[in-house]
Length: 295
Image 1: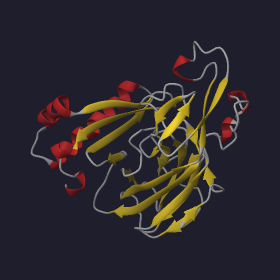
Image 2: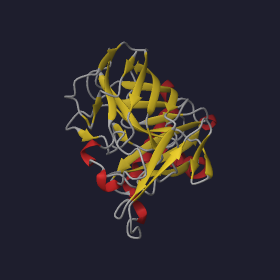
Image 3: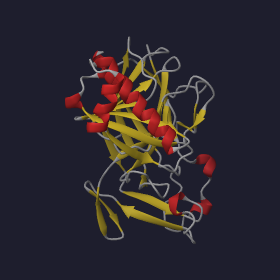
């Protein structure tokens, strides 16, 4: 079962017509364009040539049978396959060196099974999904903006083997994803990772009798809460509050004690600081916390 990259959206919206309908528990392949809609192919393709109305296409949406408002959608990222080259761009006004950049530049990087070749520097492959989310309940949100539904989270933990739990805000959930990176550093300070086309294989499962206000990631050894808001302070607070609430819900610890546990053993990281909302994540080792799904 596959959704081709001919089916893309630029707004996560409850009114979007499904590209595909699937049963609960099915595995689906999403074929994705890169964040530039595959228009940056050579180093002569500069930022000034990009149609920003066509940036961050997300393949989908996928309608999951049985997904109802208030449920949680479990998305297991089984495989990420990448093209053999990707692009990173910069220009005056773009990213956190915007005030110092004087000229546009595009760099095309070959990608192998293990590394990205950046100007002769071999960077270990760190493939990940930048945009992934369900439709919000209210007005649509463009795919470049992260919020409580997911969206442009640009989080390096969104990789093969990770599980993403998303709130279901509309019937069918309407899952969409795209904006793959062959590698990206935390912060994404220049406004881009190594942008690349590819395919993502996911398994989708609907969880009943469990609610979730914000995206939650599970890796082999971590629980990760995500907060996306206009400022680092607000996004950090959201991620911290959500992890604190999870701890108090599933342990004997009080609010005071949960906060102190995070101060002792939790790690707060910046996922990205360049999108309309910034994204911060709070990580806690799974050996310290039972599954929130068992609460």
